[in-house]
Image (cartoon, rainbow, N blue to C red; front, side, top):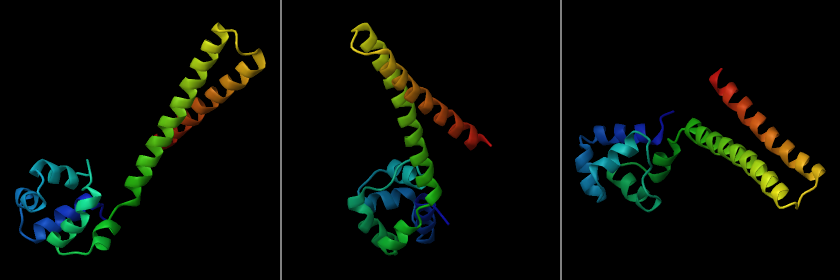
Length: 131
């Protein structure tokens, strides 16, 4: 299954249009069209209908080409970022609360345990993706 960028590029070429010609019809720059086709960005949701009309397909056909792997990789990146952020936040919170003498040892250990667990999950996930 093609991703949306490959679909846009393929449909544009089938219409015999250059990126610049598509950009002019869409009232965007040719750099924007290039980014769409390389999956560095996506067309604005308000312009999808116009893009589909210009390319001669339905909005559904254009959007259904979106590759699930692309979304899955973005979700995985976000989850990994959250794990790193939680781990960092727990560490900072324990240090600050200890300095302010506002936390007991048991709570500190629990928070550090949560942080370490997040780091472990993150490390396992990146190790798994390398294999």
